[in-house]
Length: 390
Image 1: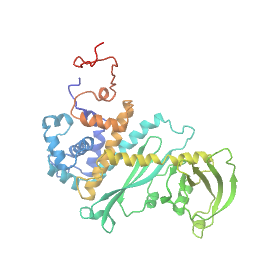
Image 2: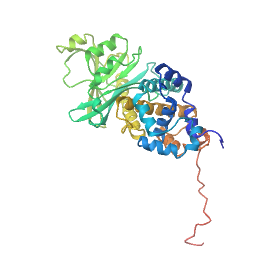
Image 3: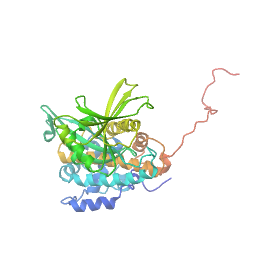
Image 4: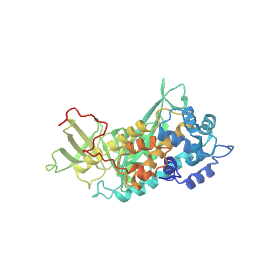
């Protein structure tokens, strides 16, 4: 048995502290804090994510009740609700955002070595979408969404091959999704899969001019003229694959080049879907399959909302909310890194469940996560009474 490090400190060994310290120095994160460092804050909030703490008081109570183990967890500062609240309100959220981005890049490099999805494609595959987190208008007036409601949006670009977010941008609920097309990092020859809420032909034409591909769904009022029809007879679920030009008064000017239009029939849902793309080399069937991969970003949003603390917040300021969300993303990515490095077959949800109830244990994390349980079918308890004696 490991006599030294707790499970929590073993998890944090995968978070490069020297990188975090560099970011703290750049943003003066420890300025006017003597007894509660920025690293202490990150560890406390990561502990809250891993063990599902509900409030700052909850974090304080749990950590103080295990005060003799805090040093072995790497927490050296004075844990108190006041210190946590003040740190969340005053420390720059960009420290936590940049650290999350560093972990994301590390995770992407690890998962890229073991890519099993669409090996026949050389293109990078990304899905762009957002999720809305509802807030109380009285407590979060800075995030006004509607007349009597506040909300923030988490805009996310997800790498489909690894299910790791590569870009995360937080805004108030009022910001329209399509504006994020101006902010996402563009990679040459990459394929960006977006829903019809992102359709803005001026922006889509900019993507086309930057040598990147998009796959999206057409709106019902799309005006176009067919230039050429491609053979789809070998595809059972496809009605047509056309090269078209937009004929709308504005759209024909905003997107003057030809675009590809594909009609797909989803027999399971009894629904017809029309896709638009600027990629003319992919098969029509592959375009439909790629759009179906959008469900991975929906699963990502569902997962983090269910299993991490981003629906209720420890502070009400914009700074505190962003710190909590970026810490949650860091924890998600850390678990993904551990899963890959230790070659754990269990799901991220199962790994989180195991870690949450063993957080103070001093078992080796590899042994804990890769433990196999076997039940002997012939085993009978000595205390078991027999109903019939043969």
